[in-house]
Image (cartoon, rainbow over all chains, first blue to last red; front, top):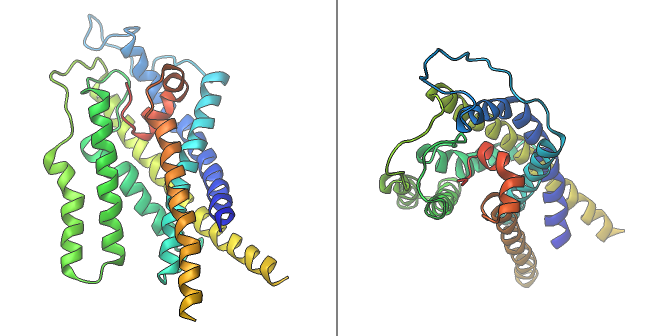
Length: 232
Length: 54
């Protein structure tokens, strides 16, 4: 049973993570590199002269972008381990898990890990002013945990008491609020910041939908494998 | 019959917890630990994934 969890999570996470990493390189990285030109002061917003919105960006960097790909695959493998743990428990309680139902698990994972913390702690472009990183990380983990429990209760709860508790769990982190900086000092134009957050969410959703589907598929397949091995 | 079901539940629950804890550890490592080498290597990913960075 351990191997079923591990093998399906590694396959699903590596595959979805590779696609996520490539999508990030194509859609997010140019925006990030553009922002870094402002972060480092190479170009200045509201300086003496108007600044081109299409500056020349550094191209593909094998070391930097290769590391990004590896770390994206690792991150999505981490997501996959948590996702498949939940799928395994849910299947035992009667849920159907396969590549098709995995899609909705993927959407739920995106909501819990990206959208829920991102609504109040928006994906940060380099150079933004932000509160202490440790405080934000505590808020991030608490928000993700509350969202995971909330979504589970919505999906598998059976009465309004449970669903009400789920709504409270989903809303509470945002009512309480995330750690915020004392003053704004970001040198990056708002246009770039907004595009960055939007792209981060878009790529995140696409990657999570794939992750959910792959996780469902490999979970299902590994189950069939183990059954046939057991019968042989 | 009941015994079989309970045993199978137990068989699945522990690996699920193990997988979840391992996943949490991996995400903490790639997305949250602030050690300089890890931070630099994972910098772009942390931003692009929406993890708190810096």
